[in-house]
Length: 326
Image (tube, rainbow, N blue to C red; front, side):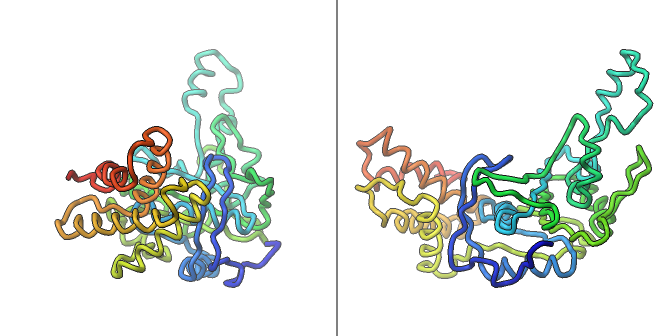
C-alpha cells in the first residue's frame, strides 16, 4: 500500500463529499464516525470481512464507497439479489455465447477461457490476472470518479458485497472458503486466483438489511459493525439528522422555508417513527425516508408553490414516513 491508513486519516469531524462514479451517478455526503473508522482498521488488521448491519438508508453501502474514495482504492462491487449464485463473486461464465458459437460451428469453442470474465473477488485479489479475463461480462472496479481521482491497485481494493441477505442461504455458506482463504480455483481453466506476494489484502465490506438471518458460520468469519439510528433521545436524533440533511442539501432549501426546515422534518420523522415502533408496525421510517422527504419538499416548492411548508410536510409524510398506512 502506498500510504498507511490510520485512525487519524478519517475525517470524523467533517463530512466527506462523494463524487459521482461508475455505479453511483449521484454525488453524496458521508459522515465517518469513530466507530466506523475503528471497524475498517480492525478489518484490515485481521484480514476479515466487515459485515455491516442496519436499516435501509443508514449508510452501509456508502461506507464502502467513502473508504474507497478517501484512500484512492479501486472499488469492486457485487449487488446481490435472489438469483445470485456463489460463483458470481468469483467469475462469470458466458454459457449462452458458447452455445451460440457451437451452433455456428466455431472451431475455437473448446477454449473455455474465452467465455470467462473475472468476478469482483478476482479483481480484488489479482487485477493483473483479471485483466486477462475480461470476457463478455466484465465487472471492472471503479478506478476514477468525476473529480479525476485515480485509484491505484497497489493501495488495495475495496470489495463491496451489497445486501447479501437477499440471496439464498447457500450463497454465504459457499463463500466461506474463498473469503476466508482469499483464494479460489477456476474450474474451467484450473488456475488458482490468489493475492500476489507483497500486495495488500482487499478490504471486504458486506452489507445486510437483516431481511433474513445469515448462517452463524458466516457471521463468525466476519467482524460486525451495526449502524444504528439512535432514537433514545429526541433532541440528539433531530440534531444528527438535520446536520446530515444540511450537508447533503446545502444551498438547495428554498429561502422562505428556512434552515429550520431540516429540524422540523426530523422532528416529524421522530414522531412517526416512535408511533410505528409503539404500534409494532413492520415498517419503521428512518434516514432514507428523511432524505426522500427533504428531496420531495424541495422539488414540490417548484411544482406546487401554493402549498405552505406545514401542509406540504404533512402531505408528504403520508408518502414517505407512513408506508404502513395512516
